Length: 224
Image (tube, rainbow, N blue to C red; front, side):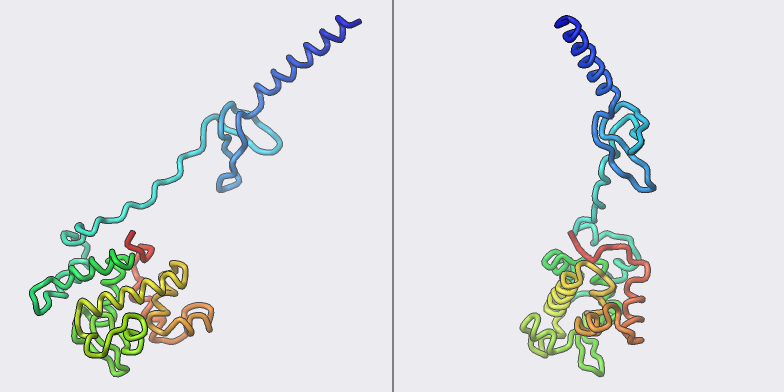
């Protein structure tokens, strides 16, 4: 009798091991489109999911962004326009150098800075608006004072204006969790209005401003 129980137990264990060998070697991972991929082989058709021999596709590598130096030689039409239009400051330093420095300092995309300057001042360091905004990135005196401690007479200094404007834009990108359009809307109309309307404020100037800057822009706003 003991021998029969021993044989029954032996065959039960063998059957269990055989069934385990047919089971998927790992859990099934849900993939887009309601398809599934098993972490490890073999192929098994199951009620829960379909496992396919192999391993999941590797996670795509993050997009490699250009190095700072590459912008000096970029043939991108906007970057070339930005680089060539800015010219040099009174000391002979290319103003585009300040754009690169600000981009690295405040983690803002070089292209986005150039797009903002093109829209704000057409790359003219002495630009001014009837509302009182000044310089390349059209900073309001109160904004420049509160964000960077700049006085009114400093807003036409290309280096200080680019540094402060980029710093302010970086703060808006952080405030709105990397949403470039909302950050630009806040740069133009203020964070309060973006929060009030829970999105881009319905002001013609602001909607046009955001649309013109982001048209064709594929970046995430950040330099790194």
